[in-house]
Length: 273
Ligand code: A2P
Image 1: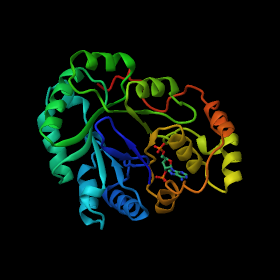
Image 2 (image 1 turned 135 degrees about the horizontal axis):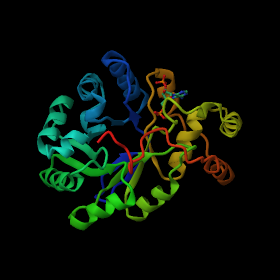
Image 3 (image 1 turned 90 degrees about the vertical axis):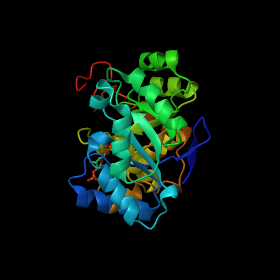
C-alpha cells in the first residue's frame, strides 16, 4: 500500500475503508475485519456515523497492531455549534477504545468551526492526535481558519467521484499543502456510476471492475480514496489496484465525465447544521 505524506511527516495510506452506512454493528465488524485481513491499514469513521465503538472493537479483535492502522474520526456539527470540542473528542477516543487518533477532522464547517480548530490544535499539541484537518471546507472556510491558526489543516476530506470530480477545490487544497481525501468516491448509494460506458470500457481493458478503475484514477491523480463496502469480495477488490496503470488519455476521459452533480450536501448551503 502506498502512502501520502502529510505536512508534519505523518504517512497516510492512500486507500482507506469508508465505514459510513453499515446496516448494523455485526456487518460493520465483519467488513472492517475483512478489510484489515485484505491489507487495509486505514479506517475512516466519524462520531456521526454512530459506529466508533464497532471500529474500536474490530481493531481490538483483529490481528493487526493498533499502531499499524491509521484511524480517522470526525467532530460532529452539534459539538462544534455548542463549543463541546474537547468532551466530544474524549468521547470518540473512549468509544474507539484508543489512546490516540491518527487524524481528527472537523466534519462540516458548522458555526463555530474556527473555535473548534483552535481546540483541535491544543489536542494535537498535547499528542492526542497525530494529524488534524477538515472536511467539506471550501476556500472561504479555509481562509477563516488561516486567519487564526498556528497549524494549518493538513487534510481536507471532500466529496469527489467521476461525476462530481471537485477538481478545482482539490487543486487549491493541494497548492496549500493539504492532502485531499475523496468521500463517496464511488458515487455513494444514489449515483448510477457503475453503468457508465466509459468506465466500463476502461475496466474491460484491464480486466478490472469499475470501482477499481475509480480507485486507481484517484490515487493516480494524487487523491486519497475512501471506498465503502460491506461485501468482503468488493472490499478486497477495491484495494487490488496495483497491477495496472491508467494512461493519461484514460485519466482525461474520466475527468471529462464530470457533470458537477453532487451526491451529498453542498458545504455552502447544507442545512443540517
Ligand atoms: P456494498 O457495501 O454493498 O458493497 P461510496 O464509497 O461511494 O460511498 O459507495 C459505496 C457504494 O458502492 C456502496 O453502496 C457499496 O455497496 C458499493 N460498492 C463498493 N465497492 C463496490 C464494488 N467494488 N463494486 C460494486 N459496488 C461497490
